[in-house]
Amino acid sequence: MLRQLFILLLLLLVSACATDSDNMPQMDFLDASSSGMWHLSELETGPYGNRYWVKANGTAKDIRIILQDGTMLTSDSLQVCCAPKAYKIGNTLKDIPEPAAKYVNPACAVVQCENCSVWEMDLKGDQLIITYCKGEKFKYVRRQ
Image 1 (cartoon, rainbow, N blue to C red):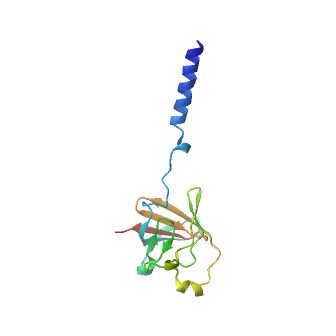
Image 2: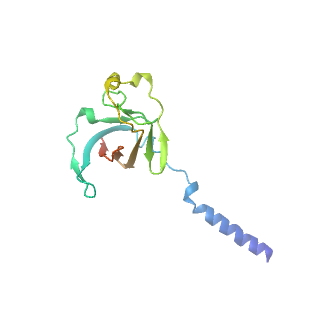
Image 3: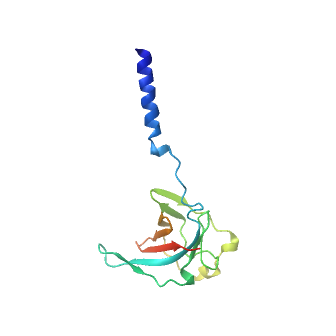
């Protein structure tokens, strides 16, 4: 009887572990699936509570290149001015390292940045939505 109870308890524990999604490895956002070249496609506009997407007339300056370490670059392979210190991806905060010296953008020295140290990012396939500190949302699409 004790042996049957032990086997039943063991089966319950094993089945509980098999369905526990918290312990399953999560794909890191800043990996090969998110790195690459992103083109601005849409901007969110409209009054609060009635927001909608409009087509963006993106230029080469609106292209973003995301490296695997999280560094965001312009189409000229220079650091984006006023870049955040971290990205919020879901409920996870991902710190971004200081960019390498070769990516430093000299134009950033004359830009006055607002204090916006975290950008929210949402990746779904080949679509990336970045939400800036004031709630502005920009939609980017991956292009080869």
